[in-house]
Length: 116
Image 1 (cartoon, rainbow, N blue to C red):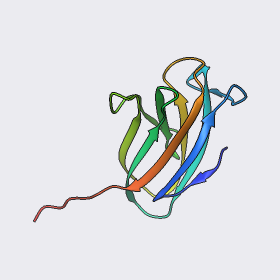
Image 2: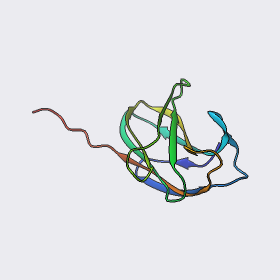
Image 3: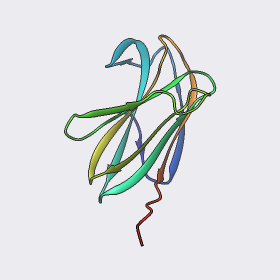
């Protein structure tokens, strides 16, 4: 598994031809990052790249998977979720086979708007 990432952190990386294949599509390279939460947290996870059409997967501790391909016209990905305490796997990959290049992955605490 790849590097750890925390809420309120941005990391940079690159998909390369030496990365392992995505479990969802063997023609796409993938990097993996670990997110561990100690309490239920509302998060927004952004994957951005100018080099490839970003595709983001999040795997829950139970094995369930959610994903996002395009959140905007630039091909970036975003997930906004409420996550329980536990360890999650983030998979950075591309929406198109054999794409490589630099990316940034950031996790922010999402705003929670309550009713008055």
